[in-house]
Length: 144
Image (cartoon, rainbow, N blue to C red):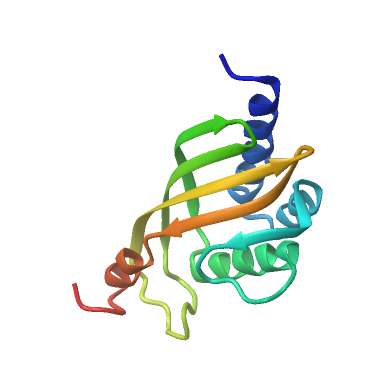
């Protein structure tokens, strides 16, 4: 049976996830500010040295410019102690510039796994593995 902490941490993740799937950058920014610690440690592709909350806003803005119909479907969600693990499938149509390249009009579907560590109801750390190679292959950026 999950603990109260595990249930709360899953709810924090779901709030973050649900906001992202609205594609509303203002709402996403608001939820990021509410659920992600400013000094959170983030290890994922596509990030620069900006503070965590700003880096996450930049990632979502970049993704939605490139894939305006992007959807992140949560396939599995596991909570244990202070961590939540999410296995997702991402789909979207490349209708905008991405990685310095012109839109391809191609649909991509790729997997990602993220581990969120929560402290006091906020996301304090995010570690992620995104299948960027599959994404690049589907877009024709690298040979299959």
